[in-house]
Amino acid sequence: MRLPPHALPAPASSCLHSLPPNAFGVGYFPLERGKNWCVHSDARNSGNYAQAPMAVDSFRYLPRSFIPLYEQRRYEGIDEPVWAPLSKPVTEATFALLTSAGVYLPASQRPFDLDRERAEPTWGDPTFRVIPADATEGDIDVAHLHINTDPIRTDLDVALPLRTFRRLADDGEIGAVAAEHYSVMGYQEPGAEVWITETGPEIAARCHAADVDVLVLAPA
Image (cartoon, rainbow, N blue to C red; front, side):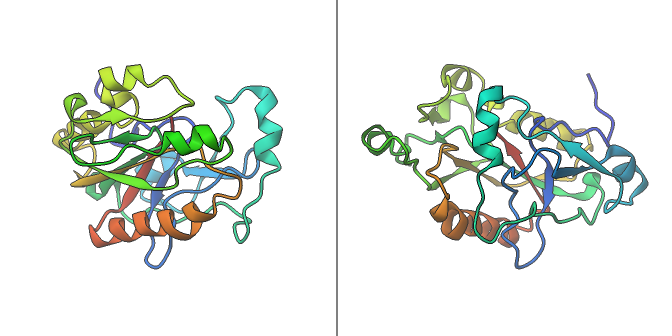
């Protein structure tokens, strides 16, 4: 099915985040139901990107019993969603992807540290891996203790939809696909201190250096 320019596919719990200078705005942590916003398609279509917000339920795919754990979690210095309006049409923007599925390149990268996580169950590897835009199922493996990783090995687009975004770029629905994309292991220790102070800013800096306009979170 061909998608119109204003109907860019994104996971239901994610949002399109443009990256402002000097901001580690690669996304936001879900603080409260209804507090996360995407630019509505009508606003994108009209070019008025800063208006007409649309509520996103960040907890839609969580078991209902898990929601209080995340609603009560707070991160120091992050009281509101990190938001940066998209300053250009999606048809002119360069997109990068961020997956939280623990994807890595076994030929050149270490897997995420599952041994330490098994020994310390409240800890999660806070590092990231760079995945090239032409990566395929034959190039990757997955290290994550909290999801079924087999479908990702069969179809990388399940977690990192590179083929889909390349097709969107070829069809002119988006401007371009960045040369590199990013993978993290979404299970993190309470507070996510290393992620907030090191991993997030480093990913954002790489996006700025590569002139990426939008980083799309593909949550596992």
